[in-house]
Picture 1: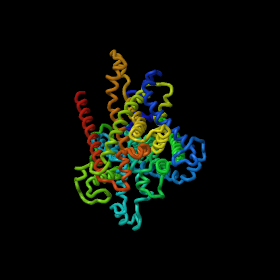
Picture 2: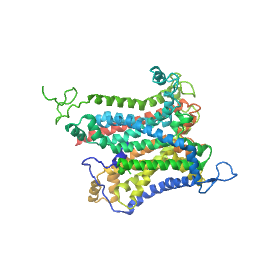
Picture 3: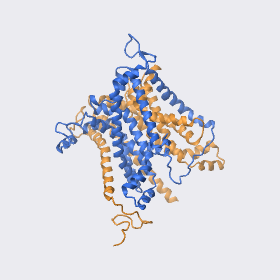
Picture 4: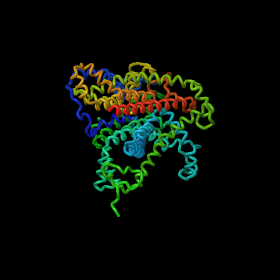
Length: 310
Length: 290
């Protein structure tokens, strides 16, 4: 609820007649810098510097003859080519899965957000209840819920049995350890991140605009496409980003629900970094992932026209 | 015969002040949307139901297939090795991350909304970037940093990491609240000869409390549920609850893990309900006074 609320107030389409449209712009003062200093220092030391440490590590070179995990500073740009060469399928797969999961989460999440924000408007108790239901899964561990999916999709589960009975799944078909299971898990795990920003946006939407669409003889779908949907764009942008970014870096779903042919780039980074102690490869893969995501986010935010999000 | 009146179908209030919108043609879609949303809610909640149900499952470590109902796991939640230990670790890390990140993030949020200063865009960017960086990258970057500083991964490194990724979320949450405050209130306090300091503590801060509490709750839940960043920065000896569950996934997760997960779920649910009820009661009281 809070992430969503926060993200959506970033977008410019504020409520009509709010208490104060423009924040009171006080002139630069020492006070501002004093307030910023502790937090920004923290982020500098434990976010900015680590990113540079990561970039530096990505260019390290193995010390000849030394034991595993010993590297020395260098500028070996080849590391990038080598990791791209060996892990491009994982990269493609990660972004592919994340994209499908994001689209699926949008298709599933938008109606949920719509029902909570618009259809339940004026019924605070129902609205509160539905919101709690969206947030509730956060409180059981994310890993436990992913394992629950493993049980739901297991070969002997009622879901698989009934799908086989209905002929949706061939008799020898299975759901567990498939790409379907991975995408299903990704969609599931990040669905609340899609619902909440869209909800926060629709919640503040003036329904009179929709009624105006009706008064101008637009039918329901037209009003939706021409009024509601464009108005909710900031929420959709925030939701898709909050879903896509973590989904593309996730490896819990692919390692718990997938198989050897569904590995995602996060798994490769994890394995290289923590198991084979191949820091340069892991670091260069991380850098590649980060750069691609930042590029995608910038293009997307520009296209969607809500730079206010930043 | 006559023009279709606004509310032909039952249920609609006939005393609507203005003419209600025409009955739209696509009443089928009107029905489909809630049904679809209902199914989506089901999708969201079935795994939670599974998690809760399997906390009552009989029969030891391979807690994947239903064996029978028992209350033993709930009577003895620490019965499996390391479950409670990792759970306590998670709570400790979560509390530290919550307190530190809420303090730091609140200060930043106030500065960002209330002041115009040089470098504001840069500050906003520095808040946005950690949220738009995947967890694997954050985890790997921090570990690279800790390795280069020769810091051993463990409790401290995990706590440091958690504070880092919680700050941005605290900032955006509190920022929304600060932005919604009417600055005239503080001006009024100043007119009444309050010093800026006491105006802040007596007027602004109390109004910020709900936002700060929401941010703290968010920070705690993010920290408590984090796996990927923790996995990178915890080393082999230190374990949090999600890491414990993940690591034991191959060998079979003890039902006690489900007990603790479910207990957290119910505790959080209870908290939310209490907050809602208190809020509703307060609104009612205020409405009566007005």
